[in-house]
Structure formats: C-alpha cells, structure tokens
Image (tube, rainbow, N blue to C red):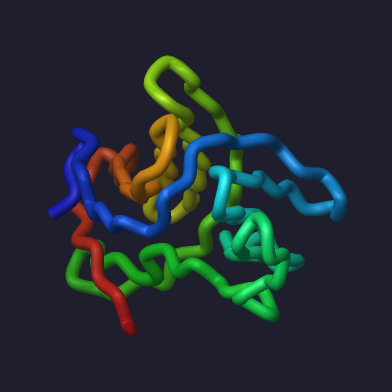
Length: 149
C-alpha cells in the first residue's frame, strides 16, 4: 500500500561514477555522469521515457549500449481493486553537489496522483553510482504498486 508518506522503493548499484552535467545535444533533456574511466548519459527518449543513452569507458570511447535502453518505471497501480496503467510525465531535474553529485528526476501521474523520484548518486572519486526510486501517493486514497514485468 502506498500512503501519503514517501518510501524507499529500490537501490541498485550501477557504476562507479562521480561527475554530472546536463547535456542538451537532442531536444529531449539528457544528463551525463562521469568518472575518469566511465561515462553514463541518462535522458528522456522521444516518448518521454527515462533511458540510458550512453555507457562507455572514458578513454576507449565505445558506447556499450549501442541503442538507448529504456529504464522502466512502475507501470501499474491497484486502486479500489482495479489495476490501472500508469502514464508517467517528466516534471523536472535537480542536482545536489553537497556530498558528491545527486541527480533527482521527478515524474508524476494524474490518476492516481503519484510522484516518483528517480535518484542517481555519484560520490567523488572511484566507486559505484547508486540508483534509488522514491514513490509518494498524493491521491488521498490507497494505492498498491504493481508491475506487469
């Protein structure tokens, strides 16, 4: 059950990255995180979905992803006993440089009224980049997160 309080949904260690910068080579927003040896570019694809556009070794330069890889967000919620497909809309991005670099991408749905924060955190130096998702229910009623995957 998702309540009005925010909860921690997932943590995944992805890569050892430490620097972040926005990248606007395409019309869709993109953000690049990098260390001395790894580069990761996140962004929105043409359908507004979060995707990994680039994953490469900084010195060798070859993009290991080849094509954009959609990073799936929750796709269904159960409200009042019925499964509802969620359509996420990107709202904004924020960076916090107080302890390394933390990129927070905020997405919302209208029905039910949910907010998802996809947070990517790169500490300075070598080491992993962590991803965490935080989900908040603003609908005033109960909702259960589900997935069809």
